[in-house]
Image 1 (cartoon, rainbow, N blue to C red):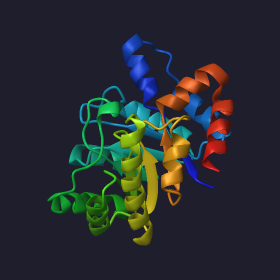
Image 2: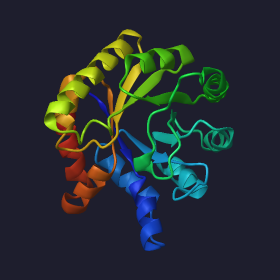
Image 3: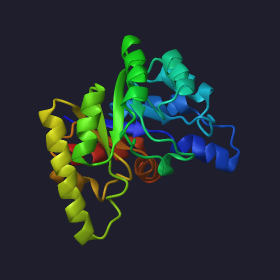
Length: 235
């Protein structure tokens, strides 16, 4: 069974937009886990907004399986080492989660390897967010990370004719990652409509990350139904 990871970034964004004081991340985590979500995720940036350190601490306490998505910086390494998530998901910097994306690993191995090593020594697995590209897979493997997460945000909204070619490219990259024995995740713009098509192109993917599409559906049908509907697509 594939892992279903829920990003809760949309809730801190909503808090910032509405100036609400009633955000309860631990309650959201508990409900999501009861609904069958495998892991919970938050994304932090250098300015620690809209996701704050206190959000990271509260979700870490509440979640049985917690992932921290972050740019690979020494400042945020300290946040990760304090929070001790199960996985640190290394992505490009972005002011908003929707604008962040895959790492550019060209020439960055020397700067990333010490960070990956520090996380491993703390018992935190590293995941590299990469483009659906064969060279990116090779660079990530050379970096020594045990897992990659393919960024699908640039694929899912393409016209059908263009999307087919990009999904073939994604499938090739996933097959290479599988041969290299990397754990494989998919994330970026995934929702109920496009997910079956994406999974058909890369059946070796073992993790799917959803965020705003899940939360939007949960507003209409509840967390339990939203999770069950996604689980049905993952099987």
